[in-house]
Length: 228
Image (cartoon, rainbow, N blue to C red; front, side, top):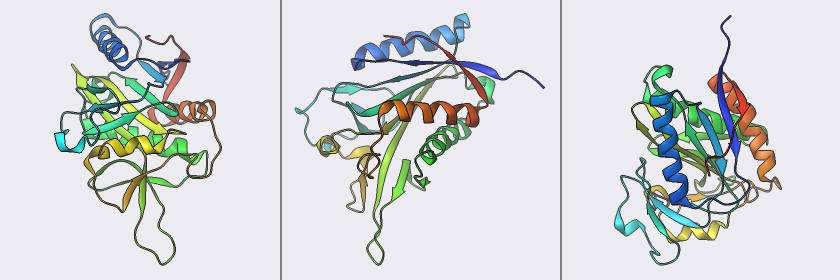
């Protein structure tokens, strides 16, 4: 039996400015490809801000003066980051995983879904709607589904960066300044673990994410250092 691959795991304890995180990710991604630097999952929070993906439309930024807005360079549309949301930046060598981008994104989705099962949340993906969703339809009521996690990645020379954001206890009102991921339909909203009635904190979520990542990606996690 071959030894499982190792990936570093690091957690920033204080909110990280977005531009600093983005620059550090790009540097580490280049080092993974050119210098054999360790692959890394970096967990952090950001101060309140909006990011625009490569498919973002100007009219989906409803409150342009509310928070700083950054061009993310990743796939997707507008999203919100802020305190109480666990951002996980995923710096992995996708080439050694078969160069299958669809399968890689599917694994990221499965990672989130597996982690949420630790809290007895039945989450899943939906055709035509990126991210991970929970069904909140009431018996006999109209369809209602809320997004609990977003996914947006970029690949450079087959190394991934950016990643996922999972809503633990963010201020959900902050999402009203954008059309999250371009989905403007009252049946589809945004939720969080605490909004679902689960009083969990970031350390609980981090532990669930760590265990689920090892299972889904078949790797062994080792301690690393935050990039900022």
